[in-house]
Amino acid sequence: MMNDPTLAPPYDVESVRADFPILQQEHHPGVSLVYLDNAATSQKPVQVIDALDDYYRRYNANVHRGIHRLSEEATAAYEGARIKLRRFINAGNKREIIFARGTTEGINLVAQTWGRANLKPGDVVVSTQMEHHSNIVPWQLLAMEKGITVRYVPVLPDGTLDLEAYANLLRDEPVKLVTVVHVSNVLGTVNPIAEMARQAHEAGALILVDAAQSAPHMPVDVRALDVDFLTFSGHKMLGPTGSGVLYGKRDLLEAMPPWMGGGDMISRVSLEGSTWNDLPYKFEAGTPSIAEMIGLGYAVDYLTALGMERVQAHEHTLTAYALDRLAEVPGITLYGPDASKKGGVATFTMQGIHAHDVAQMLDAEGVAVRAGHHCAQPLHDRFGISASARASFYLYNRPAEVDTLIEALYKAKKTFARS
Ligand code: 7TS
Image 1 (cartoon, protein in one colour):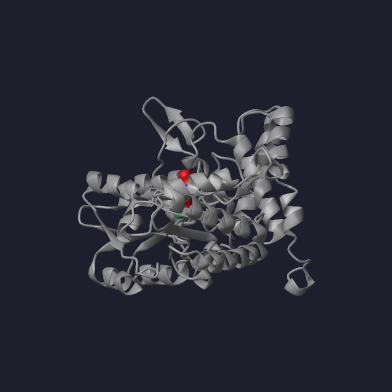
Image 2 (tube, protein in one colour; image 1 turned 45 degrees about the horizontal axis):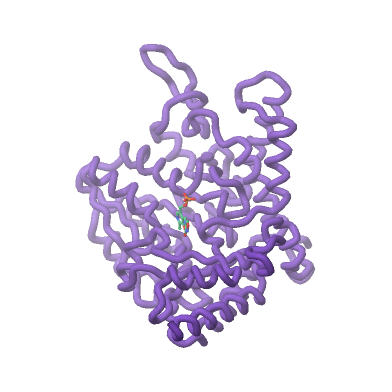
């Protein structure tokens, strides 16, 4: 019965907002904060802030080491977070949940362990033109080292991937790995990962998914998608910076060599050589981000209690409204597909006003957006622009904030018309 959406209480954005202390403050004297930079990082609810506070006040200790009570409590909370994260993405086993500092580290881990061990000169890795730099540069580094080739699936004018080109690459080239973003941080495009995974596997390739912009905003089920690796950042989903996850299928992770060497990742060390710890610890060298991962566990509790379907529906309504209203503003160009095909991102340029100036003028009105290339320069090159402004939404944003954004944009236009 719990899953019957007709029985769920309506989404109450005001009670969600009440959990976020930062949203209660003024951005400038007399101007309230309209935080629309959620694709960069999310704000944190009091439940997560309190979890960090409680850890440092009451049971701060290193994990997996001490026999004392504090260390046991810290270890239980830290490993408890792993179980929460396993459930959150429906992984089959908690050993498949590798804790990492974020998406960037997750991708680099796969490149440096699986990639180094399995790729040889001539092998092809397929990425796309809409990737964040963190899913381009690690493969370029590997290409310099191993002589592999990186190919990119082009982006069509509507901001979706050219899936015909993708199928052709898989058919014509010795592709060993497809590495693709689930939801673009600029266009908002939701890529058809289950279908892309099916095609990759049919061609004998593995697939790695950058879920930095999907895991915080929609249900993600690694088994339903049938992906080999998937990674995301805690700080974009209400959790602390320095927290994140790399999911990998167990047999793949078992066969991969470790990456960083040090404490915790070994089984036995002698001066002649060492053996490795079991999963997931083989990939978790050194003292990890203990408080941060515990905090991320609380963030997952918060998201799960709200329900990811409801978070997604709320953001969809906001995005559709924002795109409609933005389209009314003269001189605006919007990038990416329509609301039905995208996550909570609205990226635009304004004729005659540089994106940085747009962001600065919005800031004066209390509206925080990001301007620049959003760590996706090849994508900006594709659309022939060097910078854009981006409003990105999350579970605490309300339609009235879209209105504030639009009013601030009209004001910016007026100011520029005068100058
Ligand atoms: N992949 C995508 C799709 C992202 O949006 C980001 C961060 C990353 C990877 C890297 O995540 P990190 O947590 O390891 O840094 N994106 C953004 C952004 O759009 N604005 O600021 C950071």
